[in-house]
Amino acid sequence: MPASIIVDSASSGAAMAALAGKAHRSAGTLGRIGNLQTRLARDSSEVAAAQEVRFRVFYDELGAKRQFVHALEQRDADRFDAICDHLLVLDTTIPGPEHRQIVGTYRLLRQESALAAGGFYSDEEFELESLMARHPDRRFLELGRSCVLPEYRSKRTVELLWQGIWAYCRIHGIDVMTGCASFHGTVPAAHAEALSLLAHNFRPDPEWDVRAIAPRYRSMDLMPSEAVDVRRALAAMPPLIKGYLRIGARFGDGCVVDADFGTTDVFVVLSTDWIANRYINYYGADAQRFAA
Image (cartoon, rainbow, N blue to C red):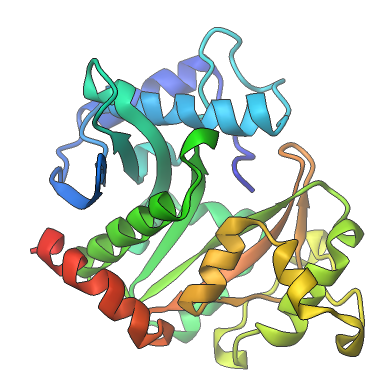
């Protein structure tokens, strides 16, 4: 579910104007590894550049449908961009203005912003509201629109993104991270082994479970547990989903087919309490420094 609400150029312009007038809460660096650094977008030009990166990945590379995208804009944009923070990865060796150094992005939507605007993006596919109602004392963050340009898709870039996300969570007192993650293609059976592994081995306890909304629910339990080759199933998973698994995430009940973006979406739930200590220690020192 990279994107399914694409706005026309007039709506996009209004959203960008709102972004331009928004005083940013945290413009400093949130992480750094070598020549790469991560921080939040500081102004509308940087958000627009992140939207261009998203367009290159979701539309040019992965073939999302273009009928709702303005031909001249070449940007992936929706109404949520104006209320989100945009985590950026920048390659500081690229010459020119900083917005041209953006090589990856992640969209961050905090609970208070979502509620003020009428809900989360993933509400269109999964029953997130019921999960939040069960945990009124927790602060939720929705992660979405993750993408990195092909030449930067490395373990180092993933680690930098998580360093930035962890620092952001420390700054804002986040307790639970949620969001959609995608398999490429609209036929769940093509990912039967990987989806079945998630269904059998990586489901949350009932109090943390989230179900796909009824009209769009598709089963992930496509193979019996004993027929799943764990190593092969893990190898077939997208890197983002494997990254969530390494951190300690769990996955909701059912998947959703997004025909516009050509994906099969699953729902990720990650309480900060579940993150293994080795990852807290790994990301924590730098994150604490950048969150201070």
